[in-house]
Amino acid sequence: QSALTQPASVSGSPGQSITISCTGTRRDVGGYNVVSWYQQHPGKAPKVIIHEDTKRPSGVSSRFSGSKSGNTASLTISGLQAEDEADYHCCSYGGPDTHWVFGGGTKLTVL
Amino acid sequence: QVQLVESGGGVVQPGGSLRLSCAASGFTFSDFAMHWVRQAPGKGLEWVAFVHVDGHTKFYRDSVQGRFTITRDNSDNTLYLQMNSLRPEDTAVYYCAQESMSSRPFDSWGQGTLVTVSS
Image (cartoon, rainbow over all chains, first blue to last red; front, side, top):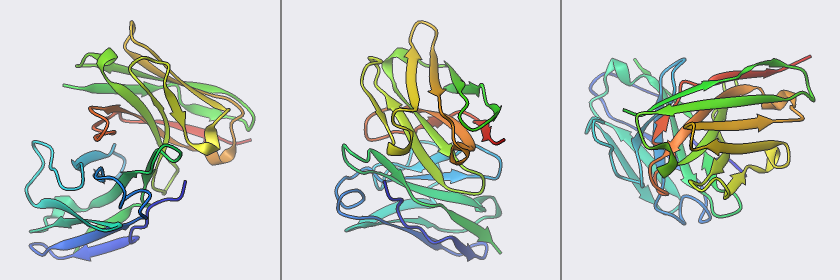
């Protein structure tokens, strides 16, 4: 049950846009349309911000968007704000043997 | 609104056992599948176990298969994780999560409970 690959850290200045990648294989990210993304502030529980590759739950800012190409999913945050500083985790279904697999998480720093 | 409250964490010696609970409210518990997800200190999230609404269909990650058991009590709106033969690498914050549909596995989360396996 290998983890999906995310960069350990990304950074950006307020107002800028950043993109976090999440690379898997055709057995997980590329095989199913169920990549989800979670935002986690220090000491807090994760919160879903993208589900089913590109869908945003009600109440989540439109500044968050998801996309996918082949075996790589991406989370883009536009118009960076200080409160976006957090850890971001991707997740995908990995089939009936692996079930659900997460990435290692990416720490976003807003400069 | 959905509320999930975990309890039962603590410090346990290697080889010991612990039972975690997750009290659910704000939704019809018996209508939703549930998961346990853990996070080791300073690490990423890791899916642990799943239980279907019927309480019979269950899945586990390989590293806990045979040691952990997920159960649910739909009459009491509570999810459980029985953890036996605990290892230091099981040290983590354990979260319960509600699956709103099969394509949305972790839609709501509890605040987590810390399990520390150490001698």
